[in-house]
Length: 217
Image 1: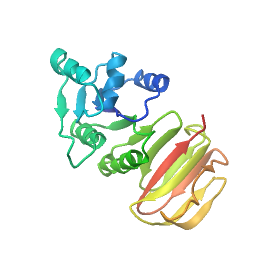
Image 2: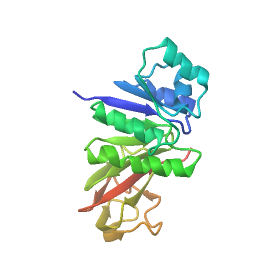
Image 3: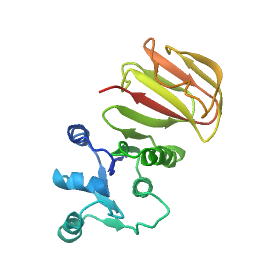
Image 4: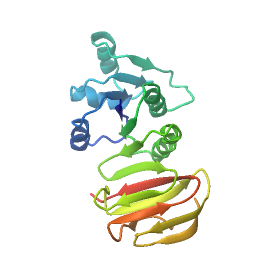
């Protein structure tokens, strides 16, 4: 049985967008630290709560602790993983078959970069996982992938290697095609490409690539 888990983290939470996403069916919602405040304000009951709660009011934490039966996993602020990573690992132990992370972008770029790297946890387990906001859909791919214009999140897409150089990388059907390219983390060549026809084929034999589908406001 498939199990779609949504993590609401503590980054930028665009109210109208987040509410529209949460209206879709989710088998489980994990509230993470300041993301818990958003859920509380909109009377959305999470399935689990995780975090060190250093950026959410004690009143809200006490409400869930004393007036609900939601399982709470509280951690010391001095720890070896971010709250979002802890939530992702929890999602995996719950048998997640599809993972959506909201509130993982905006504000501090170090948090965004950490969240992108955290996607390797579900990726290595073979579980589809996406970071989503109103302008960006971010995921990891590990080989040949087709990006259809009809399914694209926006008019642009960018690719970046994660964990090292990616050899023999090719793009067909793109405005800026590539053939047998060495994709490196040292340049901006593959930023803001576009789908030229109906679809783009992304091909590479080994490695991990960050795929960002993006649009302007």
